[in-house]
Image 1 (cartoon, helix red, strand yellow):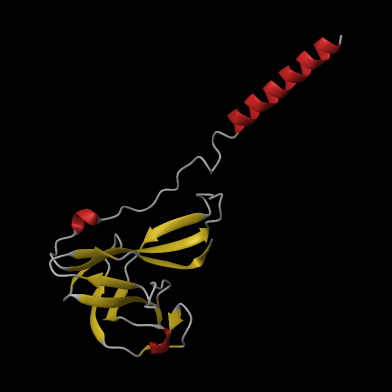
Image 2 (cartoon, helix red, strand yellow):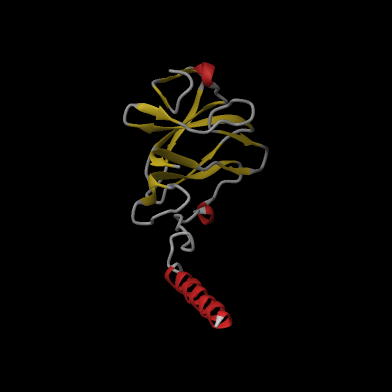
Length: 169
């Protein structure tokens, strides 16, 4: 009698386990989030910086619901300055700025796929995108420079620009 109860309990646990596996197979954890194309195939410069400008919107917490989280390639004006840190922007210590107090090197635009490229002399640069009337950048390097990229002679550097102020992580 005791053996039958144990065997019945094991069958029930096995059925529950198999049911969980079956019903969890379409879980957002298993569905790989779809990123926009990288656009590396569009690079046509031999020295400078290329990248993508992607707008992140929605909830990107550990379980991503693709219906409520999306990354969209966007057209934006990109401002390239000499390497810039927080002491050179107004207001300091944030992702939105009203003024950049370093030398403007160049401007360019991303295309409808979010792709941009720009030929630059060797050096270190900071990248900002224009969001309405403000400059946006949300990443710092180990030396405190804002959204920086280093260009070396005869090399092209990738600098991904992610606009994330409407995303939750």
